[in-house]
Length: 227
Image (cartoon, rainbow, N blue to C red; front, side):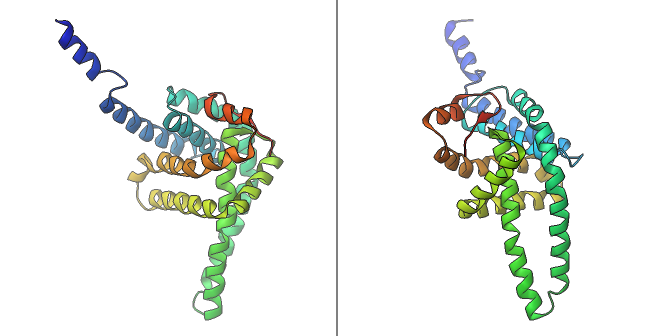
């Protein structure tokens, strides 16, 4: 075979080829979404799985690092203990908020009840936003649990417009997966990627120049942050 055809074949099957890059990213989206969904089944692992998903999406899709699933499982192991502990706080709070939602919905038929229901529904954005920030922070930085919750609450209020958008995106992804089965193949990874468009723009505002370099170039999980 001459050098010309061989070079053409090398270009076609090169991992840097646009077609194979698209296929590879598609496989990553499906694979990460399914692994995330599987790891969330025990419920207590939702936080470490979500933190690992966010971190992996940032590293592989935004920073073009390779070894997608190795990055994911390393991050999952790193976040597991802290993430599982955080779920012991998040889950009871979520149950109480869900009960409150049910109570408010029962009074939807009256004018006052409708107003209270809408107000309660809007207010749910704040705790949901804190959880979204929490999962991203645990994936990207090293925090003790108290500081992680405190910082998540501060960021949720300080960047409320971004918080609202991320909550709506995340809620839509969850609703799609609950109502139908097929969005589980892509919705988790895509939602994490869309959330990163907001979070990764905000995080550097609170870092020193040295920490910003670590945030963008390191593949180790996680980095240190002083909020």
